[in-house]
Length: 121
Image (tube, rainbow, N blue to C red; front, side):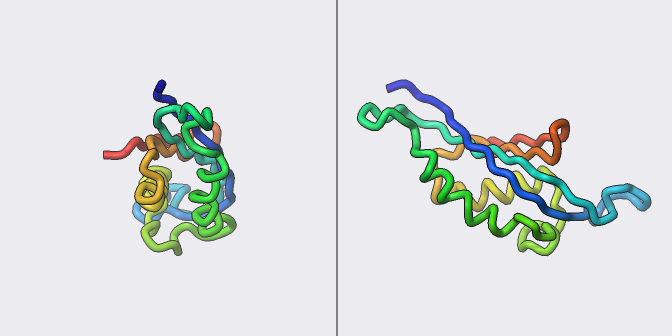
């Protein structure tokens, strides 16, 4: 069977600040983003069902994480004390990988031009 990659986008709004930037850096101030994340999975096409993974099953894995992040201050979430896009991608990966073994990539978009892509170790 052919191997394919699928992804689903999720959106949430959160506030944060970056505690380790140099003095005077604008990101040291509390600010917010409308994040768009892509959760990508890869696997063989199921010959019976005709898919790699049911999008509804992917949503079930991601929805509780979006609930933790949406309209929250990211700095207050365990593991996100320095909530850069890179740390957020890593946090999402670590939260998802155990129950979503087909996970192949996490994409975090702070805005249309600031994007982080993480594909595991």
